[in-house]
Amino acid sequence: SLHSLHSLHDFFTNQATMASKIATLFALFKTAEGVTDATQVMKAAKDNKVVKAAMTSSDSVKVFTHRRLFGKVGRSLFIGFEPLGDDAKGVGYILYPGALCEAEAYAPIARDMADKGYHVAILTPPMSVAITDLLFNLTAEVLDYWKKNVVSKWVVGGHSLGGVVASMRLGKDEDKMIKGLILMASYPNDDMSKVDAKVVSIYGSNDTVMTAKYPDGVHPNEKLQIEGKDKPTLSDVLPTSAKLVEVKGGNHTQCSYVDGLQGGDTAADCSFEYQMDIIKAETLLMLSSI
Image 1 (cartoon, rainbow, N blue to C red):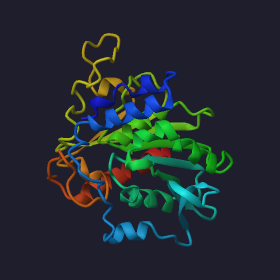
Image 2: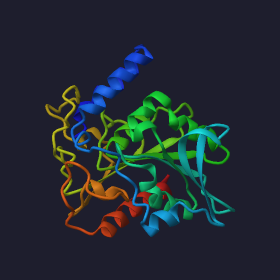
Image 3: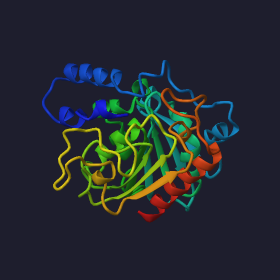
Image 4: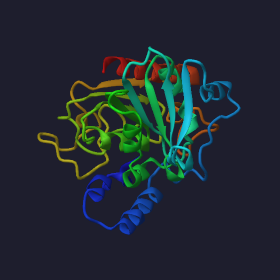
């Protein structure tokens, strides 16, 4: 469950000091159910040939790590997947990793989209925790790197905690270039039922990290107030046009190429390939519709 993160939006929009923000960020992270079960970062399956191939540049896609200083020096900000030649669509996707999941674990998703002409950035947040984007704003780094004349429309999306953070970015960019949201085993922290954007939520029936379930699970944020809804559900906070995609037998872990089973999750009753094919297909549908 992501219920311990529901105060993030209000907190990070007030005038608290940076030190106070950092202290609260750590407290929220430590109490996040389903995150504290993990004792270390979920490593990308680097022996997986698909991951290795996805992280290798080709004549049609440039794969690179963009760093803090001049793009070359300092800590990584994001992994970029840039389509080359005349096939670029002018549409991009910013992917926020799940908590304690290495960015490379999502590389095959990003590479598949780049192979089809879409610019993709996987954020590499400090400590492999997407909520740190609320401090360091890696999202802005991506939007600044690929200017409007290169990418004019964007989709944001993420897995688990990454999806929560992605939802907080929707509609908040100054130039209103972010047009869509992809949730993978995740849900928004706030009411987004009135947001003018395309939304798809992909979730597995065997997911036990998300304690609330689509479509009728009660949203864990007890502060949420939606007119006519005594206890808003996960689907209540999404636009009525949102697409809900259940992966029969899918779980939380199989939204990325990681080794092992995430703490608190249940083994999947479907193959990894089956769940990942659905995720990639829905991601492509979203990007092609923007």
